[in-house]
Image 1 (spheres, rainbow, N blue to C red):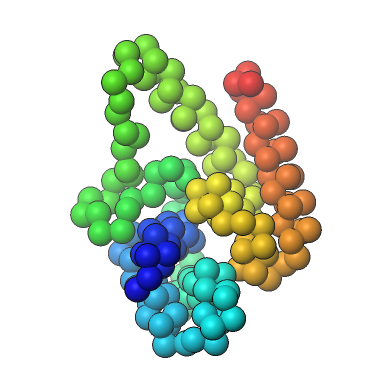
Image 2: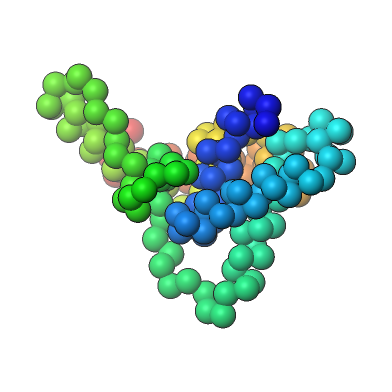
Length: 176
């Protein structure tokens, strides 16, 4: 596995976890994504490895829900910065890293983080997915376009709209 693909493993896991909301299932889907990736080389040889990884993961997540007899009842949003990392034993969210900030600064940082998370959680799922791919998983506009099967223009437009919605929600909270 190349160094670039090793870096992508946690990002693919985070994407699968965003989609299925279950740690064990996300781990399985991530492993299956990489297994399928290594058995197919057509996209890899064309230089589209990253987009191909996300397309595989997206299809596997979709197939996972098709196989379920009943849709999952838990639609709780998992904030972008709180995905359990792959291989983590507990099912709790990843804690916010503590720093050497004074208690008042730490409280303000946590409060700010909570307000932003709640605002993101209130966005439509499509907007949450775009924000995850672009800001958390650091995919470029072209890569997101390839993953979602839409134009680069459409990705830019949807990202801009998602950020506008987020800013409006944060203004409502007197955050900005």
